[in-house]
Amino acid sequence: GTARSNPGGEGAEMGDGRAAEWSATIAEYHRARYAVVKHTENFVACVARANGVPQGTACLGVLLSLLPHKVAHVAATKVASAEHDYDPSAAPGTLAEALDGCMHVSESYTAAGFCLESFLTNLPTVVVRDAVKMARTYPSFDWSRGSSKVAGETQNLYACVEGAGSEQDGEACLTSYLRALPAGMATRAVRVAAEIPAPLTTAQEPTALAAKLGRCVRGASHQDAAVFCLA
Image 1 (tube, rainbow, N blue to C red):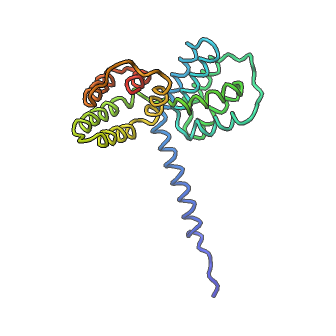
Image 2 (image 1 turned 120 degrees about the vertical axis):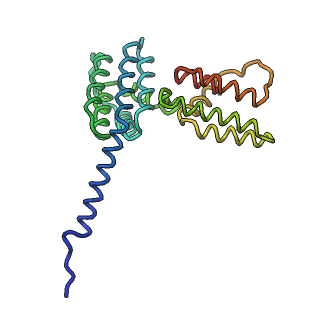
Image 3 (image 1 turned 135 degrees about the vertical axis):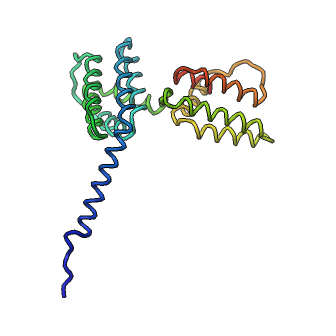
């Protein structure tokens, strides 16, 4: 006889799979939601302190690099890819507060992305593009949440360097350390180091440098201070 489709078979399993995937995504967003809201609140405060467009753009660059990729990348890329109309009389602080209010009630990556896209469409395209470039070139990272991990990895670096038997071993220690750091911290430090002149100091033993780095990192109170330690 002719095989009949099973209404509870493959189609139902695919539906169940999509439902499970959606539920997992929602759960993942809820774990990230506190950080999303916190970063947006910090952005509002940054905009309030900003003196002019360049500083406001820098605030936005930091926000874009801190928000989850699923939120920031899609929205920012879409808005930055084409010119759009906006209200030049809109106050940046008011727009930022509206974004904050929207993020506070968002319950998914999609909703948060909509909040961000709506905010970005109210800004000049050039500002969005500059902020995206800044976020990619000098990515930020959440120092308040990652400082203890960085301090631990720096201690591991000291132990690794102390036990290194050759220059090659020491380079391997440094490579492992940089890979263990938040991506934004390592990238930012390398780029900052390339832009500032080398200090006029005598060469120091690797273990002494690692110990000095450890003290500096433990005393860092914000991300820029931590980047300075590494750079």
